Length: 193
Image (cartoon, rainbow, N blue to C red):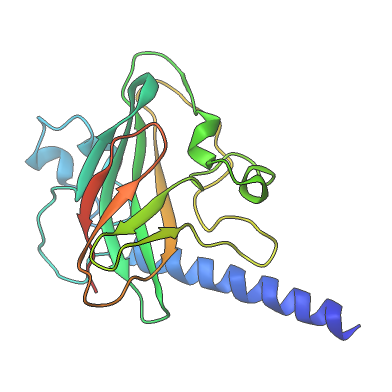
């Protein structure tokens, strides 16, 4: 009986952690008005309800990175925030910039059986800290589910979804890390917080 309670408590804590991370990401959202300021950016329309968890007010609307993947997919990383709990939340948007429906490649989930068994996700992403020579993988809950956006298989033409990924935090002396996601180019992003 106590093992069941412990498992439920752990699941509840993981859910609470996820909810808190998402709430923090949403609270710092730049929100509306971006379309009027920069109409030349095709991905600015996708940012309306996106996560922008920057702790500083008035920061630039420029993304930390914009990565072009297969089938017209564009991953726009808007923030990488270090939390005092020992993890980093990377937030942004995944957009289908093509004129047709895009099937999300299963390769984005990576090749680890535990993550693949939990469905399509961005679980194949990693952060590389070249300063400490370490690679950080997407965090998982106690049941092996990746702490990242899951449950999407296609995006309609022009459709965009908000995404997040949580990683263990590199040392505070590391301000820049390389973000990697299968089938997308790598990009150096700056950690805030």
